[in-house]
Length: 277
Ligand SMILES: Nc1ncnc2c1ncn2[C@@H]1O[C@H](COP(=O)(O)OP(=O)(O)O)[C@@H](O)[C@H]1O
Figure 1 (tube, rainbow, N blue to C red):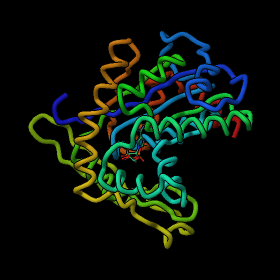
Figure 2 (cartoon, rainbow, N blue to C red):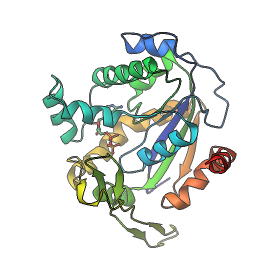
Figure 3 (cartoon, helix red, strand yellow):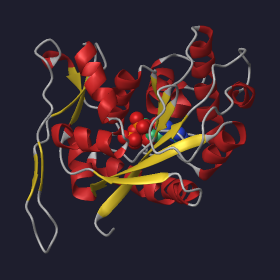
């Protein structure tokens, strides 16, 4: 669809891992698939999510993780944690991330493997992955060891993606994600208008907000180009396997969230959870 950038969320399900393992492929192999790929709903056991910069994949992954009761694992967070540490990879990662490039498949798989092993040791039986896979090779590795159930292709106009990245603010203390951008795109030449309200921080976070160093206009544009060349082929990978659900974000969270749940056949889940709360 012209004028849209395509961003994806994928869902996979797995059985409880049976043993801790030193390597990613062994660990994922232990997470063998437990349900059919023809399902059009998320499975509460394990989900996986990825998407282009600024689409809100982190926000939606986090909400889905709360809804389904599975951990939300963002590979971008794993990279930033490693970057902030004084580990051997730190300076190498800083250079890559601050230039808007992708970290190598080997490094990202190693970081993810370690996180999944920790989760397994704690008894985690599922997850939502956010920001993975981002290359066809990553998708192939994943496919080699587990079965992806569903990929949701979140789509948002590029002008909104850029504004959202530039407006993104993170609480340096609790890690909460907020947005100061107020996006108001007028209807034009047959394209509908779009309004996305800012997502203000709660008072306790307001004085602790920071901007990610890779959320500058130049680097965001670079990341969007990287997304188009490296990650869009991943959509084709899942499309050709009949696992891709396309979803145009109609606006901000309040408007989009119920529609996304409807697209995932998860409305009942939300009702049940609200009733239990
Ligand atoms: N699966 C991945 N493969 C390679 N690099 C990754 C992956 N996930 C995250 N990264 C690195 O971390 C950075 C930040 O990722 P993320 O927080 O998902 O941000 P965004 O999607 O907004 O670009 C990316 O620009 C990239 O350098």
